[in-house]
Image (cartoon, rainbow, N blue to C red; front, side, top):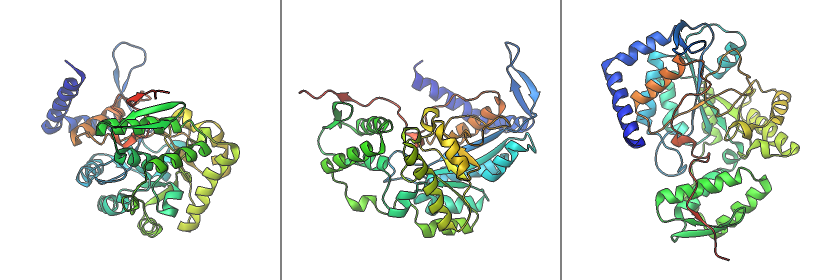
Length: 379
């Protein structure tokens, strides 16, 4: 059986469990019990005794256009929110921080967050969040909100999607020829370029992006109205949606100089607080894997008055979690509701696991997945 067939069979099994009601039974069991895999070959079912908090990471709700790496139909998002409201305890990010320090329950709890600040969060997600009374947090990358221009990685995805010809020559760490022979090849090329730029300085990143856009001019009309406006942010904030900072320009913070690090973390907070006329206590690391967060950021975050910071390291949060390195689950946008429910139940049942096995979500394609079709350029 190949991998694709295996996924297909697992999906059929999960759908069967979902429609038979067995998943509902497991979800009720998970409210009070978890598997303990310590001290033996077989796991034991034991009563849960410490907090189990899952933080979800979404990007865009909606389909079509920028961002090209992420789309989730509103109907599917609504089904997920309905499922959470019916079967789980939903808490705010403020509650997450409070309950890590001072636990109140071991019942499975979920917090909902969004990164970047795409327009669909207002037009598509906001009505659903209101309908199901979801106390969500949106992390804004400030420069795209201020300028109305999408972030650098979105521009790269878009450039590679519209570049003419079957290949494109660019200089990364050396000369490269990227295949543009198909839509998947173009996406892989964009991921390869973004992955390389994540290791570069901001100055080198800006230089490369300018060269790319000189080679592949971007039609302005396609870039318009993709990000939230400050009026929309203000409307959501008044309705109870929380906002956190996601830096100014979405860099890899571990690659920044001390002065760049302070500007990205502190200036984004200052601007957001001024726009909201309200304190901002929460931060999301761009990209967010362990080596991309670094160690120096913690001091700047504490000095800036942040109470929490979230990563994209997968896993639950509990009493041992550093509030400045909280884990999140990136949502698999290709998963059915049944698979969404099964994976969530599994992560709570296997609380002792730092990570759960899951496929890389489409919503986090900004991280490297598969090397692009790249050929050395003949000199």
